[in-house]
Length: 435
Image 1 (cartoon, helix red, strand yellow):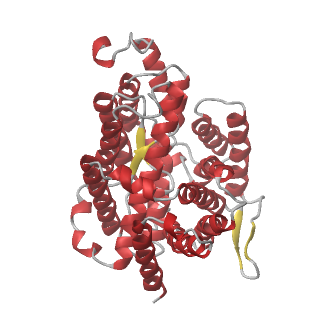
Image 2 (image 1 turned 180 degrees about the vertical axis):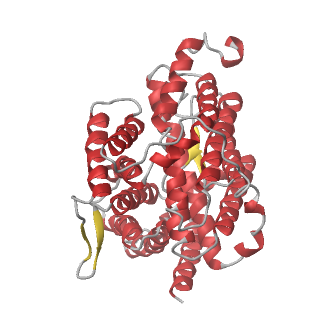
Image 3 (image 1 turned 60 degrees about the vertical axis):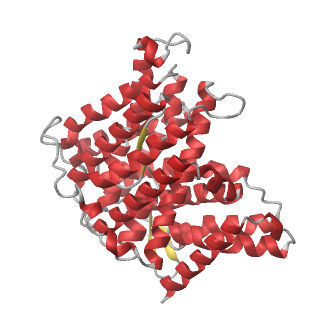
């Protein structure tokens, strides 16, 4: 084991890697409960929460295990925040597309990701997308996720005169979510590892104490069946040949691209694993990510991607793939705790959505707001996502305006031909949606 993971060379040991793996797991364990809540959308999408829970844990374990054993990085994977919201609220509920077909689009995006990784084309495509748009997409998704959290908790409600307004804080679930938000903010501010997860635990306990949440029938139980979702992604591939579904697939693909690239670099830098500004075994890490997305779609969950929360494990001393192996093991053990799904209500998960949204919005500071030709597409990308209730629409608008403002500024030569192609595709996508 020491030789395989090169523990001595990396200055670490088995005990340190174990604690790092546990730390990483606790920092991202919230996804086990948030993902079923998001994809099922309180039953609105028709997906089975139990099956999603199992698919979430297994896809996280598979992806993280491949990352640890093949790429040998202390980076964990799980279904990504933002992409799960896009899946449920935009694709399924917004466009009226069956969840089975939505899973097919995730599967295809993962296969394309896998092919681009194996052929080495992925890096070239990533480099053609302006960094400004990448940053804007991340921030916009953050606002969208936070808006979902406010909405699901009742903190923000619909109002005819102004579209939205503050909700009733005396309403039980809203009060509980507000309490949870205060608790989680304090934990994160104090740099508590796993603050989001612990915030959910404290909120759920408080909900039980005040009678807002019923006690679970058990803590440990049988692993929920995958039957309702397993293999459904392969059943509707013929329905993806429309402009609308092409836009959906591209959105899944691009956001996974951005998330993965940013996370790998950020965590690797923190761990001191970068060499001359480059990431060793980058191809293997990307292969782990794309493989996890394909596996996750087959099991029954939205896009699986690398988690920046892995940095907490690195902060605890994790330096090798053994950290990821331990994290994967914890996700497998988590399968036994499915009865706790009953206590994780929207009021419990809402603070997690809001906090993750805040974290994602930090990329706003890196956008060159003083350059109008850059500020316009960036701002429109960010603001359209929550206002149109669609991540894909925000990306489409931003990608459409970028060539326009850059050309008007006399910087047309800086635009890669692929950006023009993508802009045309997204214009068609927007026109199709309007019909």
